[in-house]
Length: 200
Image (tube, rainbow, N blue to C red; front, side, top):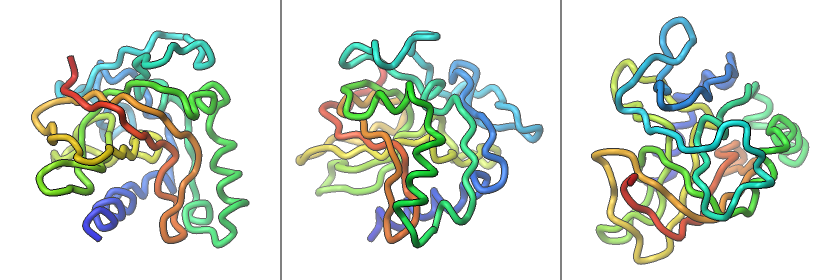
């Protein structure tokens, strides 16, 4: 129940998807929090990316670091109909069509992604599910992530210790494509993590 509430809050505050769908996938070296003019503002807390510029996903080596600058480097124009459409198959097809081919080729590939943890589910004191986001957004000036700026990460039991004092690196099998929870679009990126550690 707790993870559903957290995910719902993340998704509902990200209503900017439904209106702007702007590209916010600039290199997270410069920061990922949007300014008032719609352009990313500099944030010293933003995770740095290691993805090679102009590299093709089909040539990505297993375990290579893929940055949010690539995962979120394209416009994503969601409408209310696509988020909550009762014809899930049709809506998912339209959502998936907005994902560039070179990103879709990452589906079922082993990659590493760096970002910041938002805990979703614990087993005892260990984290077994979390959202990895491009930049922290707890600050009152931060903007919530768009749907292509987050990855739902699942970790096998017994889980991992949360990393809340800086960026984390998650390595595992990436899944690309629309996923729904209770009829609502909840993610386009998910990962079955093999390992989670503090960013080197």
